[in-house]
Image (tube, rainbow, N blue to C red; front, side, top):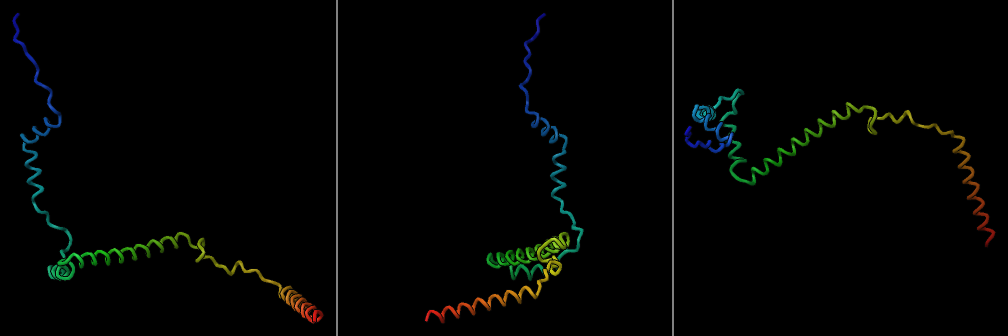
Length: 136
């Protein structure tokens, strides 16, 4: 039996094989063609006059565009901060320093104790004055 020498072809890259098969079947051409078709937006468009005005004010120079970004960031940060503070305060009502009713913790002092303390201080001051007079 004389068999011709047969050597198998070198193994191909699996990814390359799949890609070449997709090209042959036209799948890649269909994907590329469908992605180039412009999709119609579902929401109401921004009127051309508004876009033109915005571009004339902010879009023509880099400085104005940067100021537009800074203003937008400040406004959105303010709104976000206000919103998160409102949510936090609602979730922690009565647990934060600002929302605690501090009148519940007032300790009523006896007026007599304060009067006695004042009398003691007055007596001490009187004694010091007498000591000063004795030194002279």
